[in-house]
Every structure is written in structure tokens, then in C-alpha cells.
Image (cartoon, rainbow, N blue to C red):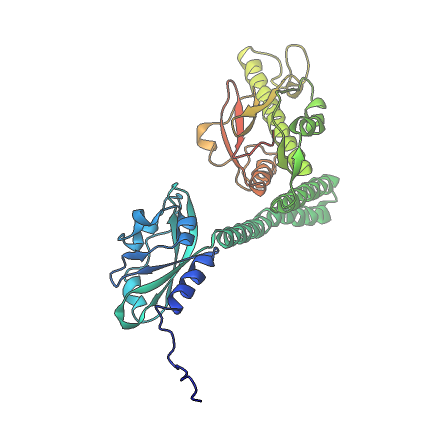
Length: 377
């Protein structure tokens, strides 16, 4: 009885491999795998590509692959490298750049191009690398901040050390205790400087475990900074709950309150001295009432809501336009007694939460606006 012959023919690609490859491509949701012709036009656009970019196949088929790129996030990413498609004919290339979705949002992506056999075009694999890019930026900011700290230490600590060294030499020569007092004042100043620098360093860390935070409660904790100042007042208008670090936000409000109080006092002192001179008072260091000018100034600070954040506004002298760009810089101060790190700390706390801050003019004085917040209620 004869045996039935067994066929040894294998299924061709169109019968078996093509559907498998298609299922494989369509099952990967972390990458978009699509095809280009030899000129760089998109010829295949499977569902994962639509999911990543938001464009349907009809919208992109026939479009040049460079149409996926953009600089639309406001950064200076630059154009993709010239000739990257020509380079891909020689072997696999990777192009890192900003990509734009159908809703005009952007992401930082890596596009990998590999040539297909027979000059039939390219296989393209796109991957969203935004998280890695943001982490890279965070490291760059930390490195920049570290450089700022070393520059500050090299400059601001060298000066008081020179003062100490000079006064110590004078004391050894003269025995005058006034030089020791100068040394003490200088060391106190150095201690405050180091404390402020450490505070900036600590507050610069990204907030990784934010919790629902009642801004009203935080303002109450920070209020003593103003309450201990004669005539100081805080007015609170309800702000929705935010996701943040309550301790750092307390430091933010304390620094903004202290900044308002100190500049209001400084302005009152200067104005009182000017008035005394203009009116021929016996001494420009006292009022007509006999009090010290620094105690005459009052400041009202208002905390209130914005559409995507909150503001802190005072009725003090305000901030000149030419200084608005500099007030958050490390070490910037217009006061001989200031360290220049109070508002710098404010900025680092805001950035650590992923928010934004700007200074503008209020109805009377300075107004700080913290925005970019997603309220919880």
C-alpha cells in the first residue's frame, strides 16, 4: 500500500511571515514603527504610530518624515541634521529631536532609520524620550546650581575672610577692641550666608512626594514673619488646594513676606530721612514724633488666587523695572544687610514643584505670581 507523498514546500512570506510581522508591529505600543520610501515619504502608518502622534494614516501617507519634527516647544533644538536620510542608506542612524502631535503638543523623540534591502526604503522606529530628556535637563539645572554655589562661595566668602584677616592684624598692632567687634560682625554675616546657601541647596531638590496642601494653613505658619513687625498685616483670599511640599511652601511664603517687610521698612526709612531734611528737622534720623524711621513703615501683604496659581502682593515701594529680571538671581540684593538669597530660595522652591514665577507691578507695590499649578479642587 503506497504512502501518500509528503510535501516539503514552505509557506512563502506573503502566506505566513507578513501577517506575523504585521501583528508584531501593531502590538508594540511603546514605539511607533512605520515605513518610508527611498525619498523619505511615509508609506506605511500602523495603529501604534497613530496612537503616538495622533495623525491617522490618510493624513501622513505620502508626507516627508521631516514633517513630524518641530521646534514648537519654544526651545532652540535646532533643525535635524542635514542629510540624515542619505546617512541612513549606509546603515542605521538615530535622530534626536522634538516631534509634534496632531493636537500640537510636542515630545522629545528618538527616530531610528534603517535601510531596507533592495533600496526599497527605510524602516522607521520612533520612541518618546521626553521623560529622559526632562531628567537630563534636571541634571543640567543641578550642575548649573552647583556651579553657582561654588562661584558664590569663592567670591562672597573670600571677601569677609579678608576683612577678618585685616582686622586681626590691626588688633594685634593696636589692641583696639573695635577690630574684634568687626570680626564678630563679619563672622555672623558669614554664618548667615552659609545658612542661606544651604537653604537654597536643600530647596532646589525636585519635589518627589507632593501631598494635598492647604495654602491657607501654610500662610498661617508663615504669618509670624510679618506679625513680629510693627504694623505688618497679611490678608488671605482663599486659594484652592495644591499638590506640594508644605514645609517648602512655608519657606516660600516666609521669604516673600520678609522681602516685603524689609523693603517696606527700607523705603520708610529713606522717605523719613528725606522728609526730615526737606522740612529742616534737627536730625534726619528721627521723625517729628521722635520714633525711629524703620518702625514707622507698615506693609499689607495680600495672598490670593489666580486661574492657575496664586499671587503674593504688597503695598510697599515696588521693584524698579530694571531690576525685575535680576531679583531671583543668586546673590542679588539692593540692601547692604541682605544676603541676596531670599528670592533665589523662592525661585528654587517654585521650580522644584514644576511651577513658574514672575514679578510684576501690583496696585501699589510688588506682585509675585506663581503659576502652572493644577489645583486639586
